[in-house]
Length: 191
Image (cartoon, rainbow, N blue to C red; front, side, top):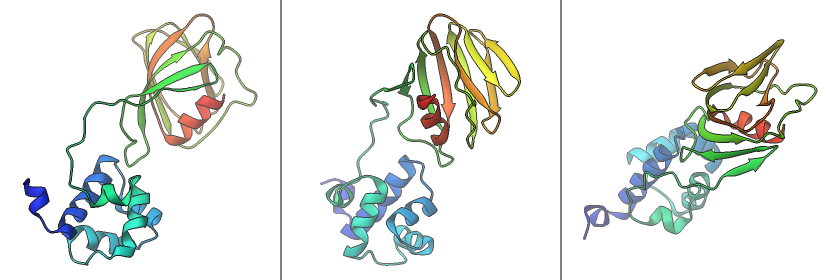
């Protein structure tokens, strides 16, 4: 039997909660809020200073995106390979390059922007966060406030998304690596 399975059930579950929370780059506050627990309660549950009750399990499992059975199961070593389905919308396909966003909500993507993404919305979108984009191929058209920029392969841009912005292409496909927050991911797929 593995060391994990030899551990008492409450210790295994505590370890599993901490593992899942860490893998997903979630803070104690984020999991506690989603599980409808006080942050101090979750902290004491993880550290073993408070006993885990059966009524905690459904909320914690839901907050961590697993079933109760998976939460009660042994700690498993996660597969480091990122194998998530692409996200398609508004003339762009985004392949996630991270399992989950960081605690700040940032996620990396490889994106292909199709030639038809050539008409900026009016008004340009604004949202919380920052965007970071590195152009791999093609010529990226970036509207950033009053600036009308062309970003070529090998160039990177980083900017506050509180500035009105949009990116697309004048002609031809563009391939980029982008780091976007959760707000940015949704906005870019809509515009």
